[in-house]
Image (cartoon, rainbow, N blue to C red; front, top):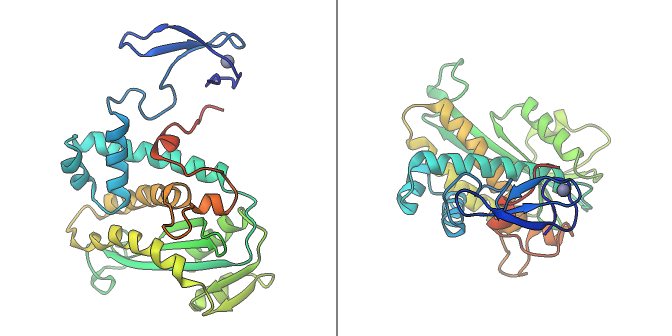
Length: 276
Ligand SMILES: [Zn+2]
């Protein structure tokens, strides 16, 4: 085991915590830490199985209330775990997904609406009505490079473009041809319309769509839903990149993109170190 504080490659057992968890001491930096330090188990009384059930059900489309029922855990416990896992997921994405070699990038968007149709919304109602999830994917590995949640505007597409540029040098974009791309993509990008490879996207979309499918049944608290959608989207992106195994190839997108050699589990995600 490595020191979770300085990275030194050997630590010693150092008694137990008040709650009976193993404590370790690092001979290099002299600090002590409990076994679950900097994981999502720390301070939460959830087993690996419970964490797995909660996160897996949520990324497969169960609402937080649904997950609370499935797991028998309080709504607040579930919401807190999902939020913390989403932060880990975003950190993993920021640090783990970079310098991606891709032949082409596929831009894709999914539409849903929150609460009511856009045509029934007042102009100032920015948290209700149309809600889009935008993705850019490396078309050879299927790795999600960037994702954005919001209204279908040039500004949002611009954000997607900038995030994607930080992940790869690839300058060939395949899209469905929405004119926004023509306005936003710079001249240095080679833009191909209608040639995106849809198979991989469809699968990703299928599961994301289960998420979005329930939004329009909601009658109020649109702003909260909107915020939760972003939290969920971050978790779903890392799930699809690192954990979800393509049944045909038996690999994850992160493996195909040569970011890792193994198929990650929820345990890898919740223990992803954030300290250094
Ligand atoms: Zn240390």
